[in-house]
Length: 277
Ligand SMILES: O=c1ccn([C@@H]2O[C@H](COP(=O)(O)O)[C@@H](O)[C@H]2O)c(=O)[nH]1
Image 1 (tube, helix red, strand yellow):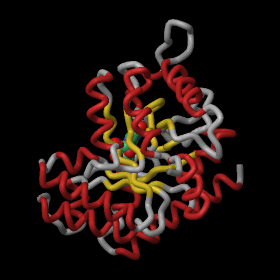
Image 2 (image 1 turned 180 degrees about the horizontal axis):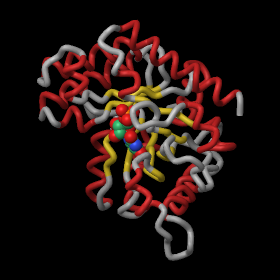
Image 3 (image 1 turned 45 degrees about the vertical axis):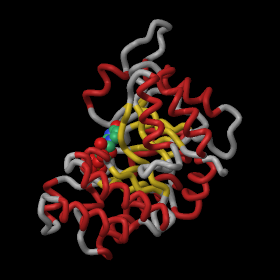
């Protein structure tokens, strides 16, 4: 089986690096003329997958917006994962799971076991119960050829009080986590399968981002960052960045062509920013 890092690099090279999030906010459902109900959720999700899964490298469903509808929402999510993957997009499940190792094993079984209905190409996890607590997910991902994206420096301003705090050896907690990721990815070519989440909103990230893995950069669009910010945040690592936009694209729906044009505009801006650095 081909490792996630290899599959992602190929997708970034052929489709461009953009990730579009599927975040069915109640306000977006209303803006699309849909009800804040299971039929609206289903229509919104199907439309987004139809518009984008055959062209963007990564689709990132935000699990919370599906879970809020209970089991029927999760069923919509399962179908979206299946259809997006069938159309050629890599699916990154944004679930941000984190727990003690024995419970982490159950999360790993949910998102990283090929037999699970929610099996995804990658999943987001939180390392702030200790990087070692992620071991079941890291091992399950490696076995399945999947990826894990670990929170390092999140795009929200509140994240800094935890992530910039100093660990016992003087490194920031974020740097400590990034160094663990680098160790997991050591020797992988062309790219490791353990990615970091680093917000595009941060200005200069101020950490060593040479983890030999992908760098998911949320915060573009509604949170105020733009593709032009990427070189300043990521410096020499910008070639490994997967810039992520949700509302910035989704607000153009439900028209398929408008969704596609918006994603294409962001992709063009990313290309220009990365080429011009
Ligand atoms: O640091 C992080 C980690 C994850 N996210 C998620 O990305 C999207 C952002 O949505 P926008 O509409 O583009 O603001 C959302 O699902 C977040 O939960 C993040 O924003 N920052």
